[in-house]
Amino acid sequence: MLSIVIPVLNEVESLDPLYQEIEEVAAANGLEIEVIFVDDGSTDGSWDAIRRLAAGDPRVRGLHFRRNFGKSAALTAGFDEALGELIITLDADLQDDPHEIPRFLAEVGKGVDVISGWKKVRHDRWTKVVPSRVFNWLVRAMTGVGLHDHNCGMKCYRREVFDEVRLYGELHRFVPVLAAARGFSVGELVIHHRPRKFGRSKFGGAARFVKGFIDLLTVRFLTGYGQRPQHLLGTIGLTTFLIGAIGLAYLSGYWAVAQWKPEWRLVPLHERPALYYSLGLLIFGGQVLSIGVLGELIVAYHDRAFRTFSISARTGLTAPDTSAVTEIANTPRLP
Image (tube, rainbow, N blue to C red; front, side, top):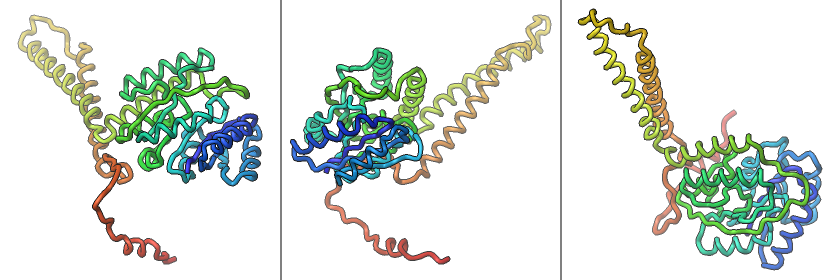
């Protein structure tokens, strides 16, 4: 089964034509599908439209958030509900073309785990296109995942990707990066991008760029140092600590000379800015080293759901007998 997850935020005019296109593609290609609409706190009647579609087609399901929780939350909820072995995401604004779905499935059939769409020719305002290209360049430079369009909402995943990749905040655009860090293969597909017909874009502005850059730093830390935080924090802390220690050693020699040679009339130690810089670096370095140690302790005792490795297949192994554990787990608790 193919699960199609669609986050929705005030797109009531687009839902019926989008559903019709998906139904046409499924019928023309003989696809077994389910469509999961996740209403992220819409206020324009989108939920009523989703309920109507679900009542008319058992393949359609809907989730309704109490308020707007963000796209990552909507996608996570949809992934949790999905039953298919493959999951495709696309936006509800009709700019993503459902007729591209067979091409995504063909690419996944070649053995790729994650396929990201690339809106090579975009039909958006330049104020949205230019920042997006700058952002994508930064992501490629900092993560090494060479996708041209990390922001594209149309992507295809194997189900097992979300057994290991956890979304929160605004990390939905970085799923290919997080998946690649776990060893999943990532590919790209040039897709047809259509002009917006209804409503307006829910994204844009300087605030989005700033938040995206902060999220990029988070992803860079998670993928590069998530299992070895002391490699980064320890390097920073040890470097600043040593610079501060060298500065204090120099100032100690300076003070000793001032005591032995009062006729030189050297500047009093407490009037030298280097003293305060050295003390600050020493204290800062010690604190960062301590934070690194705490980070290592957290990683060492972390939940096994976030192991440092990823297993793609097993052979010749017998699963351990867990019947006793299951029996204990199912035993009713005493009041």
